[in-house]
Length: 435
Image: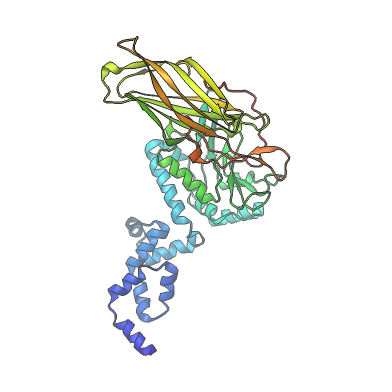
């Protein structure tokens, strides 16, 4: 029986066998090479390994030409060096490539700050230094790029107001190890980013302790369960334009695509950002900034040109209390809108409840006829603060994040946030409500 089966296999044409082998992963393909001489020959077929090189290592024909190797040899070379990261490399390498390609067009100077990848022995040395294991996906990313030089603006996003600035660098592994935390409330936590202006960082928990899960990333991005999720979600927001690039900086605003309103020829849209570093739990003081875009349609008639005179806000808090605010212009300006013109501005607000929403209108007059006055709707946008949580090792209340993006059809600059194990003191200065 065995002899007849072997004979049948040997008599089968190569094409259907190669087709079946093309569905196998590299581990199964190697196993097949030990079954019989025929399968050993077929499993070495170059196009099979070409597909695996593309899938796992993102290698192209030009990479093969430079190396002057077969696809199987190329796969073996990369596996020897990066085999422990094979489940992460393709995803993270694609994210890095997408980010660099996008930034090369939008703000190339940020690309120049990236460092070359770390060596395997360097990462092993850091683990020995901090007496803690780094996650494989974190190590994999740092084999591709060892963070960035400490420059401004940082790769991991910025936020700018008249009296406040934040810009986060992606730390290299040596600098991150220098900030490894062992104090209560932050034990076994490694900083991923750093802001020169605020002195704050986003952290990754290297062990499941003090109420955190292993690889959890916290403050002031949404809770992420792994480095891969944290980094790839950030890259996605950047390259899709969700986080806009303004003056060569990435701004972490979140825009709800439904938060748009059109009145006649004028469209108003809003994006928002939560600033945990300017917020406090006691007293309750939740700080948001919002960015508003006002645009007149390109095909609007010239005689429809107009100027903004005033604004009206209706603010409703979590208790149902309503506050109304009226004022001239927007942040001291009275923009003139003509066909195709876009006017954007940023403002801010503070809440004493965990959620509020704002809506309202602008009042315009026509340039040709100042007596012709009309209102333009500002769409309703919600601002939802992170939930409170008592630290396991500290008695102070802290802001914990898990921003639900679906609940933030917010305004101008939105930064999603989480705070965990960090005491939020009341800021020294308050920004006026609803500027």
